[in-house]
Amino acid sequence: MLPNKHSTTSGDSVVIDERPRTPAQIAIGDFSPKLVDLTDQVLFGDIWERPGLSKRDRSLITVATLIALYRTEQLPGHLRRALDNGVKRDELIEVITAYSSDLVVSLFVSACRVACPLLPGKTDRDYLFVVYCFFPVLVLSF
Image (cartoon, rainbow, N blue to C red; front, top):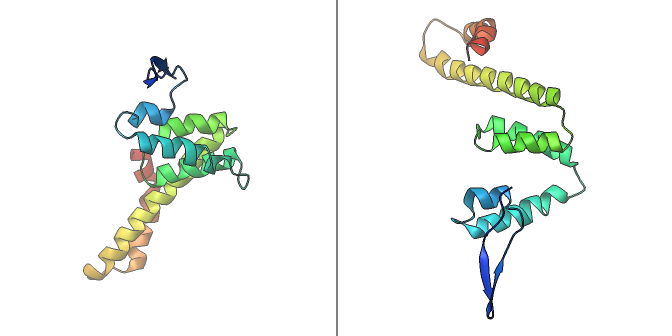
């Protein structure tokens, strides 16, 4: 991490903070110091330290959530954090594969359910058949 070159004045002296900067400080520190504080102190300082889930499990949940919400900007940092927290590379690949297939199928199924009543002559079952037949081709085309 980059050193934090933030300086503060204490009486007649200037204090330079040389501690490593957190990811939140690097991303948004100058724009929103309060959001940095909440991220560093509450999210990572409190919630991630709670004993109810291991950091490994929290990392898996976070990676899956970021995939589901298409938050790709935050995904690299959380993939690295997951590896640091003991999640194996193959497990991350499995999470990505499982979520990708679930999300793609759910998108097509939702579209079919909306389209069925509007398109005469076809039933919901006809559209689902098409989705499941062509799903492997759709996934491979991404």
